[in-house]
Image (tube, rainbow, N blue to C red; front, top):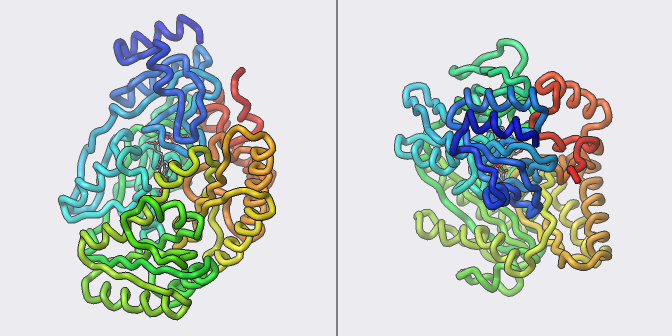
Length: 463
Ligand SMILES: Cc1cc2nc3c(=O)[nH]c(=O)nc-3n(C[C@H](O)[C@H](O)[C@H](O)COP(=O)(O)OP(=O)(O)OC[C@H]3O[C@@H](n4cnc5c(N)ncnc54)[C@H](O)[C@@H]3O)c2cc1C
């Protein structure tokens, strides 16, 4: 990067601009495990500093990569072409929680759990709950449209955004959306920015919707002999017209990984587990829990455990929460996909995945938010065997083709980034890609914001 650009950035940020190798390394990776060194890292405190950075970037033509906590799974915050990583972590104030209108206004660096806790203290609920909520940020959640366990009932981040403030690739400060429950004035620029992975604008403020906190909840853990039975139970519960606030499914490979580390007895013949949670007023929770238990039994559950108190529910959740650490212990290298299929097609998809694992001679661990058809497909690899890597890459492509064929989508919550750029067209078609590129040109004519992401022609890294 041009030395004059670095000096100009230092005038804006002073000590908050870092360009030592140590600092650059700290901001060179995300949860994909891939690494690209930025030329510098800056920590803005205001939208004005963000704006001045983007104006400079247009003058000196360097990339600007917005970053939250760097927990993304698709490479969105990686500086693949160098440039300045703009870490929004210090813009972390909750500006207001309006208990009359049920609205929160926050800066992008607020950690998701902090907002949820502050809302809870006031009897309010901010539902989006990515499993990374203890460290990921609202800005990253907005840019990826993060989902989570309770998306099946409450939806995803997009459903809780009323309005945004963002610096566009031109350096202009755009305010979108409303502070009200409704609003239909012009194009929906708020939704345009949500899920845009930092390629259209840098979000500097968000106006978010809150809802009343549910009164009570019950958690059920059901074991089945096969994936097919578990997947049919998911469809059966949905057909019962019950909407659980979480419905998580773990297949035999996932159960086997956690069996050793979770402090929870798992039946020896368990080939599939479903963790289901219902919430709402106490009377309806106990009635729905009973109906869920009956539905699980009808579809072949060998055992169903139920808990309504906080400690007991937490114990049941342990099985699900142990999966990621357990997988990492068994196999540190994995390719992690997050496909979604219509819920009725889950049995077909699970059958396909076990056949694929056998055909390609690969270990594939599947678990995820089955209530919304979202499966985390984890292909375990050694990372050293080239033939295995080729088989794994072929398997990923087959998984995506099958997903699209079944009417699904190749990413439910992790986004495209660099990881899925080669497959974008498979789902949205050439016209879809072309319209998206035209929109990108409109928001960011000089390609300043997060270059190398989403589009394959863009995704080559700098040498
Ligand atoms: C253990 C683990 C569990 C996870 N579980 C889930 C899950 O259940 N559901 C889920 O959806 N995801 C999950 N994720 C993925 C990840 O946590 C989410 O994508 C999260 O939203 C990323 O937030 P972040 O602050 O880390 O953003 P980063 O990773 O820093 O950035 C993600 C993207 O957002 C952009 N960005 C960041 N801030 C801004 C901003 N202010 N303006 C514009 N663009 C910005 C970046 O450029 C990048 O493209 C998980 C990750 C891990 C490691």
